[in-house]
Image (tube, rainbow, N blue to C red; front, side):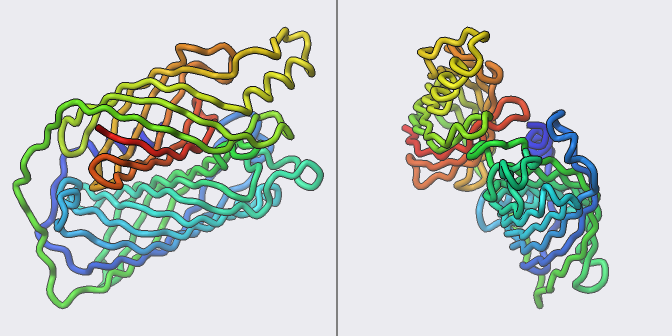
Length: 363
């Protein structure tokens, strides 16, 4: 959650743009050298080297043709290839493909990059051949990068320089146990190539009308596959049904308040397993595995894309799994005025429970 909060703070700062943009395409290569964080005691045996991360990225500049360009100080958007060498044969290597946004501040000298995507780990957990890799239970992973950099994109003709720090998180979202994941903090340095246009393009500046909407109601269904932290209990489907009311305050911000019910089948298997394997815990094998939560949230709108953060509390919690407080961070895409799709990560503190795919309607 901390990396998301940093992102939201930056988006809330006053923005000021330059008058023109020169060069619509930006190509970058960077190298990061850092440390893997010991985010829980179970990964202590894996924190024994300094990972190196190489990133190749392409960004498309915006100049104000759409309103979200103007609202967010003419950001870039693009794609990034990222390679991580953990320097640890147990963890192997990660390859990831991510989409990203670049947000600019302080006369476009300070940049925040937010990137999200999917990837591959080369040496996941295997009970016989690699039992120490409790970070990745599968080759398939999700990756998130937040990076803050000082940038000089026209330092020498079309070439520039960037220096900064980044946080890279990777895990499989509990699709398959184990799933401790990794968090890496790096210091980065990079070069950029920004081929210049013959004539600089002027930023479009418009006095946009304020946006305020009445309260809307949303109904959604979320689903996916996840597994228990106890190994070899298998992968099981889950469903979440719920709804919420939202109030759009302005172009960027929408507040949410809602409720949802969780049908998480791996908990049903976990309850049965624990009742038999650990009889002294006095766990009833017929204990209800369902949960009901209330949540409040916030959504940042970036064109047809929404970035959601939600904090929830289980009001019905018959089986004690993790904590009663949970959080959700995700991206929503509006297919049209009413229908939307979303993907999100639901977690309890630093422990991810599920990658959720959703379909909903706003009425």
